[in-house]
Length: 245
View 1 (cartoon, rainbow, N blue to C red):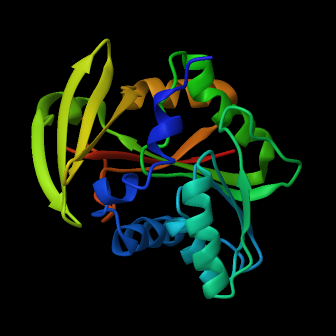
View 2: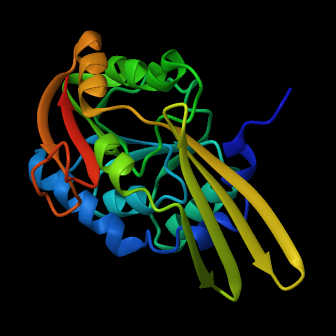
C-alpha cells in the first residue's frame, strides 16, 4: 500500500525545523483566544486532535484541564510526552489516525488546530473526524477549527521561499492544483538532501460551515487570526471557527 504524504513528513526530524516559527508564543495566542471565548470549568475534558508535539495540550494541562491528545506521528507524540513528563503534567497521549479516532469519553471541548484538516482525497475522509467529534462532545460542547482561508491563500500564495534553520537550507515551492495547496519541501544539510511534500484541500468558509451544520453544529464565533480579529472572507489569513453542539 502506498504511503500517504503525511506519514513520512510528520514523522521526520525535519518537520519541526520547517515550522520552527510555530512556537509556544504562537500556541499561547490561539489558546488564549479560545479560552477567552469559551467558558470552561477547571475539570473540563478537552480533546486535542492531531496534536503534533503537544504545544496546545501542554498549555491546556498547565491550566488544570483534563487533556487527551492524539496524533499519527509517534515522533511528535514522543516529544510531547517527554515535555509533559518534565513539567509533571498528566496528558493522555494516544497514537491514532484522525480518520479512525473515536473513544467513549465525553468532551467539553474538541480543538483541531494548525491546519490539521483537508489532508485526504475525499470529503468524506476529511470531515469524518468532525462528525465523530460531534458524538464525543457533551450536550453543550464546542468544536474549534483553525484552518486556511481559501480566498486569502488563492490571492497571496508565495510560490517560492528559502530559509536557513539550524544550519539546514529549507526550500519550499508552492502551487494550487486541483483545488489543493501543494507544497514541495527540500531540506539540504551539508551533502544530505531530503524531500517531502504537503497537500491540503482548500475548503471555503461556506463549505465548512455548510458541512458542519448538516452534522448538527451551530456557528458560535468566527475569527480571522490568532489575535481575535473578526473573520473577513477576503483579507483574513486564517479561518478560525468555534462551533457549538
